[in-house]
Each structure stands twice: as C-alpha cells, then as structure tokens.
Amino acid sequence: MHSTDAAARNALRRGIRRPAVPRFQRLYDPNRPGRLLVEAGEPVATVVWTHDFGDRERTGWFLLLLDADGEPDGEPPERLDVAREVEELAADDRLDRHAWLAQAETLELVTASAALAAGERRLAALLDG
Image (cartoon, rainbow, N blue to C red; front, side, top):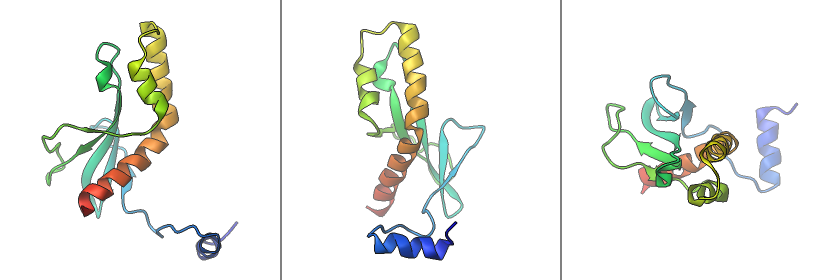
C-alpha cells in the first residue's frame, strides 16, 4: 500500500495532476433527494436523479444550486451531461412502462459516480466563473 505522499509523487511522474483534497464534500442528507455538495462547510448544491415515464424531459441527472440558507435558490435545475444512455432512455418510446422504469433505476445506479463528478465540475465552473 502506498503512502499518500508516495502515491502523489507517482501520479505526478505519470503526468496525473490531482488536488490533495477534493474541493467539495459529498454528503447524504436524509431530508433531501440526491447528494449534497458542500464547500468549506456550507451546502452549495445537490446532484439529483429524476425519472418520469410520462414526462421524459424530466429524466436524468440535475444540479440544483442552493442559496445562502442551504435551500434551493429558485432557479430551475441544470441538466448534467453524464452518459449517452441517459439521453437514449429519455428519448425511448419503445419500452413499456415496467421495462422503462427498470432501465431508469439501473441507469441511476450505474451513472451515479459519473453524475457526481459532472456536478462537481459544473459547480466549480459556476462558482469560479
């Protein structure tokens, strides 16, 4: 097992640059959907998955910004570009309801990590921009 310093040196030798500490903490809040993104101890956004067989436009991963009180800021959530399969599911009109919902739940599970990373990148761009 590598020490943190040795792993960082090895990554740098291979040209991989990464921050020593992630900018955002990912927290679970039982009173909110999705994952809460926290910066410097303050909640700043959530990354949420939604799916609706009847309203497919609402299917996918979204970034919801929070105000200074940690509540939704009133702006519409921003769709995150996570995986081609999510867009394909939203456009699919061939699957019956049961198969479509099963596919949606599966996609939520297999794309969650990528969605959090995409949410963090977009949030950093918004906060720094």
